[in-house]
Every structure is written in structure tokens, then in C-alpha cells.
View 1 (tube, rainbow, N blue to C red):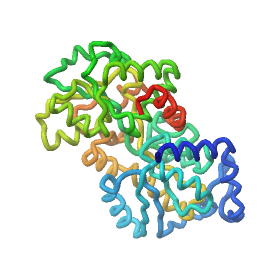
View 2 (tube, rainbow, N blue to C red):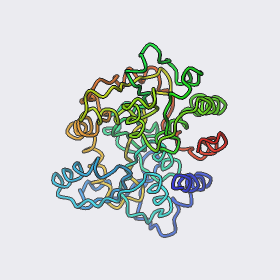
View 3 (cartoon, one colour):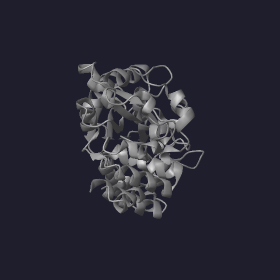
Length: 358
């Protein structure tokens, strides 16, 4: 299983404190320099020379960011090489490659992989001019990665069979018997597993176990992904489903009358996870890598994400599209955890195996 390979390698890296990577014997003294904070950074970053090549390892699908990559190439006259793939697989590759990794930038689908890179000491501190464009909730407290877009966990519901007044304010309310046979979920989905990790971090292992057991006892129907859940909701096959918010927004572009709506809980059930970027401390093209981060946070790119992928923009200059709660409103009620701490997927997978939901 790809994600198991990832957490295994991350476990090795963090157990050694990242030293096996940071002290790679193939790394020459000219590869890195020390920043004032002591964090290793590419030495050439101080030169200010904008390189004409950039290598990105992207867990984001080409359909989601390919157009922006082309715009960046046109703007900078740079040649960008992108290795697309599963976020967990790419994180594993970076850790295995160590200082020899050709990647300059890691564009991750979720914060857990970025947190793992940070714990393995593989990413550099970003300039405050970039970090300050995003609320501190959606970036590394150590400044080692920054969110580009937000994805909110929602409980979507069929508006013909479920009334808003019936929906509980807490994700734990769905363990009540009244929801038996009415729930859809995707336990093998990466975003769901990140949510369970957040549930463990926010509420503790025992409560996370109780929630999984409660949903299982309610005979939740298993689907392969978020899209299948929203489609099942539209058919009335289930009453509620645990998904990321943008799947419904995409479906509504083609079918505005689909009888499905969002419900936001007042707890971690409406976790805001992020897709974000980090610059590797082995980057060969650090200046243009920094320029790429800047580009992804500019108004044009943030508008692109709002209107084309229906994610939450993370800079204040751009508002999300659709009838969505603001991030400020969601944050007040749900976001009490450091997203970097979602890197412990191994414990989550063990818990889900013990409860026999995967």
C-alpha cells in the first residue's frame, strides 16, 4: 500500500532525526549554507540570480495545476519539469533520494506529507514576505511550508431526505442510531485518513476509536472516493456523506439543481486541510523555486483555484466561489491543531485496521 510505504520511510527518517539525509556523504560543502536560524538553505539563494530551470514533485494532478505551470513558464521564461504522482509516493521518493533529489519544490496534496518533510529536516525556511500572505493556521509554525489552497471536510447531505435541522453540530452526532444505514464514507481515501489523523490529534485516540466504531456500527456504506459519495447522495442512495467540499461544487457546475448541500460541523468534522508547497534544502534552483511559491500565492493563481478547482484561496485578496462559509468563520470553531502534526498516518492506519474499516 503506497501510504504505508510512505509512513514507514517517514518513521525511519524521524527516528534518526533526519541526520541520515542532512549529512549525506555525497553532499559537498557548497551545496548548502546556514541561515541565521540555523536551518540549512541552498547557498545560491543569496545570489538573487533567477535560474531558468525548475523541478517540481507534484502530488497535485496535472489537470489541477498544469495551466498555472504553463503560465509560470511564460512569465519567467523557465523550463519547468514536473513529476506528477501520488503525494505519499513522492514524499517517499524525496526521502529516499536525500540530498541527490532532483526536486526543487514539493507540491503536496495535504499537510501531512509537508509535516513529514519538515520533521525529516528536508525543507527550508521560507521568507516571511511569503508566509505572511497566509493565515498562520494554514502554514508551518516553523515557516518550512505554506498552504496554497484549502480543502474543507464537510458532511454533505441529500436535501430531499434530510432536513438541516436534523444535522448534528458535532461529527460525533453521526454515531447516533438514527443515522444507521444513511451514511456514506471512503475509509481508504487519503483525505479521509488525514481527517481521522486530525480527529486523533484533536480528541485523542480513544475518542477517535469510538467514532470509527460508531460509524461502522451504523452500517456506513463504503465508497472508493469522494466523487462516488456525492453521486450516491444525488441519487438518494444515502442521506449524508463525509467528503471534501469541492466535489459538490464541481458537480453543481454541470447540474445546479442536484439535491445535495453542505453541512459544516462545529468541530474537527469541518477540518481545513491544505495543499501546499515547500522548497527542499537540496534544491539546485532555489531562487526560481521561491519565485514559484510567490507565483502560486499571487492574485491570478488564487483566483484560478477559486474558479477552476473550487478550492478555498488562502490569501485574503481572493474569496472562495459558491455558497461556502468563510475560512474565518470555520477557523473559529474547528481549527485547533497544527497541520504539521498530521504526519503520523501510521498510527491512524493501525487504528483503522484494528477497527476493521480498512
